[in-house]
Image 1 (cartoon, rainbow, N blue to C red):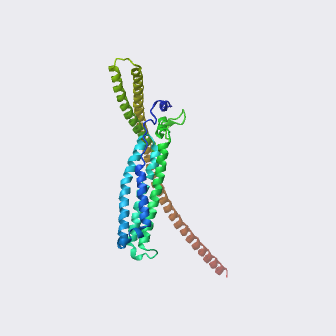
Image 2: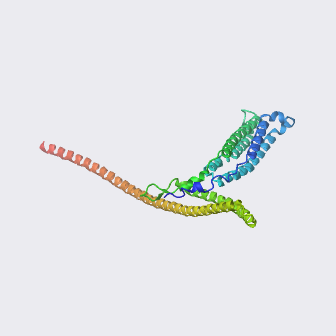
Image 3: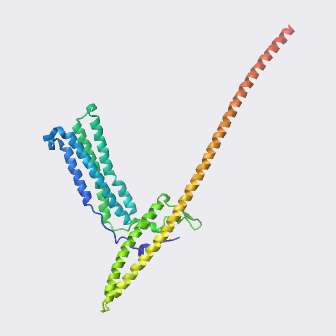
Length: 332
């Protein structure tokens, strides 16, 4: 019930973490600032070729869209590196942010296209002013999102904490008490958490394998020497410790793979159960419709019987009146 409770003390936590480079992000922000300057001062900057100001603004915006698309792929690569270093929740937060600059530029390009198409019907502002306003707005929004991304990455580079994926070492499948079996805790992301943890441990195994090879080479050099110095003993002890960590991580991966299979089986069972519930519900719906149809038929029959009964009652009253009239005439 308490799997991997001792792992955070034995497994490598954040010793192999590499800071994320911000040079590309800063360069992109400088590029956005230059486009903002172009949008504000387009009338004076492109004054010698005033007749081509619309075409130049639209061309610059398309170029910015292409650059943003290329830069988005670079950011995806950076976020993927952060995810592989064990910061799954943090990378998910960045994953949503890095899509926004390209989306903002794309929406701005669509707005500029609409302005150019509806040029004859727009009389509020000049087309040049509208294009510059749209370009300035999209650049400001994209720069805001990039500033948010740079702030988060700077925070990531500065803090010294454990990868959040290690929280999954306590297993998302935990019994609620000693009398119940495994149950879901955030079941929708269970497979994603276990897969991220597997990737993180595979990266750790890769680093440990490289370190182990380096230690073996160093140990072989010391073993070839005949001085019998103390570093040989230290290296042997360190090599044994790293070998133990490697075996521990391999055992963790096996355990996590079994838990992943168990989680998938539980998800499949839940899906099958949901399918059975849906089919039963559909049967109940059909039965309910059939009963409603029968009830409607009986309601129609009851209405017809009530109308027939009312007619019969009216005819009986008329007959009684006639009998009364005949009796009175006979007495007379």
